[in-house]
Amino acid sequence: MAVGIMHGSLFPCYTQTQETGVSAVQPGTSAPDEAAARDPHAPPLFSRSRTGLFFQAQPQLKNPFLEDPLLGRYLRRHLPHQQAVFSDLQAFGERISDEVDAWGRECEVNPPRLVPFDPWGRRVDHIVTSPAWQRMKELSASEGLVAIGYERSCGEWSRVHQMSKLFLYSPSSGLFTCPLAMTDGAAKVIQSLGVPPAVDSAYRRLTSRDPERFWTSGQWMTERRGGSDVAAGTETLAEPQPDGSYRLHGFKWFTSATDADMTLTLGRVVGRDGSIPPGSRGLSLFYAEVRRDPQGRLEGIEVQRLKDKLGTRQMPTAELLLDGLPAHRVSEGRGVASIANMLTVTRIHNSVAAAAAMRRVVQLARDYATRRSAFGRRLQDHPLHLQTLARMEVEARAAFLLVMEVSRLLGREETGVASPLDRHLLRLLTPVLKLYSAKQAVAVVSEGLESFGGQGYMEDTGLPGLLRDAQVLSIWEGTTNVLSLDVLRCVARSSGLVLQAYFTQTQALLGHASRLPPLAPAVGALEGALSALGVFVEEAAARPPSYLELAARDLAYSLARIYMGQPPHVV
Ligand code: MFK
Image (cartoon, rainbow, N blue to C red; front, side, top):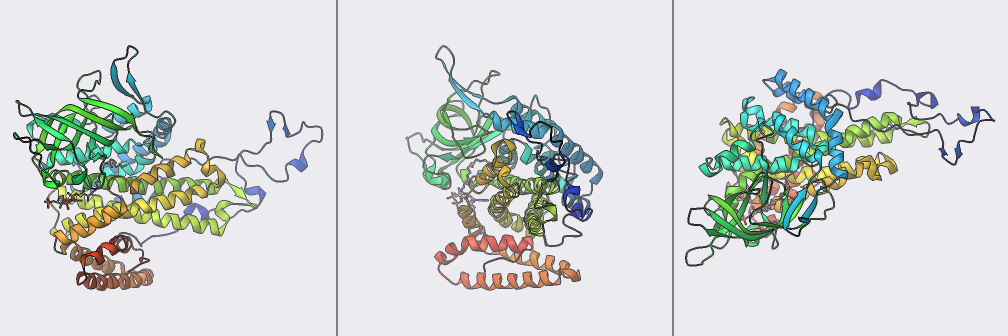
């Protein structure tokens, strides 16, 4: 079972002190009877510039690797090359708390802006990003945040290493994890298509550790007609050129991380007779370099405007008019199927971001509970507050372990050691993980903000941004319903084999867990849920397709919760 076995106290630090009352207050807090002891001749506490003595100590971000015993335990249990990975994660965690988190904040308060014209009226469409955003790119290269997945120095565990690193980085990254997700996805697509010569050098840049060479990639799939229904929504046309390349003409409605160096995008090749191939199979996949010279000037692209978004404001998202953008075709027809590898990778990154947001807010809330007093006790000594934190912790752990499970499966597939069962599980669990972890993240981060009281709602604490940025996780890279239908798609296309793999694996995991007597009640509840799920699936198979479609979201949630070791609410 991915989750359910949680050793020891959830909050070891809470068992160390039991003080209550004013003697337990931390630096930065004040005792309630302090005013009574004051010299009567002292100036008033609250007068003109004097605003009293009490200032709440703020929550502290400590090394996120050392603060996360579950991550350490997971790696210790599974990883063969532990020492190197542990040193890497510990040093990176130190960097995150010491400097990178502040850069992330800088990205938030200094968002990108568009300069459409130069002072003399020439169209330049320059996207100005903060120095911190640029430092994130250098950091990503030198820390190997994409490269680790391709160097594969940990063999089948390389994706686990990479995703662990991104898990530490994500909430401090100023959303730089978005371009990294697309960069990783692009590298994966190019690699899976056999690295055609036209994109060989791009592939090496995407997977480079050299900040001077490292490139990020975009993924332009969304047009005005639709983000979900890509086939019906793509109007972009590709005009063949005499040298075998193409020029793209179209309008891309959402292009995230528009300052990327290259992109993969979809279009329809115009035939010699002017015909345009329709449908999903009429889409081809194209590679284009966004910037054509060292000055970063665009060719064949006009930036219409930057998007005004609820969150993810650190990152430029733009509407682009493609007006003859030079491009190379990397797959002929079957564009959606060709970019599917990208969807798998970016959906896993999305889930890493979701699990990481939960972990971060729980870490900060736990720390704050040791610093903040109310009603004569620290928050950590209020049982109801502790219970709320414990429930958040359970969700965060569940998401983390499922993220690691899917990363493990991806690593196995990429290193050629995956069994058919592993491959079926990877296909099924990727949309399940993405859709469920995104919902968990919004709920847990929202709950987390509440644990800071009014301060959780104050922009300058940096906390509200966590919630705004979490809200996108269930929208981009496939909404909850689109991904629920993707679950049905993979069940149908595999003639049910993905579900068979799911039942086989879950029963095996429950078998292991049942050897631990304290887990017996949880194992019993999960076995009951699994068998109810089996009955539901059999019955649904005999009903019209609309029945399953209506049940798709509940089915996907149940698959997620059972695998996470949490009995589902439905089924
Ligand atoms: C911090 C982390 C940041 C993360 C990055 C954020 C970047 C944000 C930028 C964006 O949001 S970009 C837009 C993202 N857009 C989407 O995710 C699209 C959502 N829509 C879907 O997923 C639709 O279900 C889909 C476009 C796939 C429907 O397309 P079709 O063409 O109507 O589906 P169809 O005909 O069922 O499938 C076409 C082929 O693709 C089939 O293969 P074959 O041609 O070989 O039969 C399918 O099997 C294959 N396919 C579809 N989904 C697949 C897949 N293969 C593997 N995995 C999948 N998930």
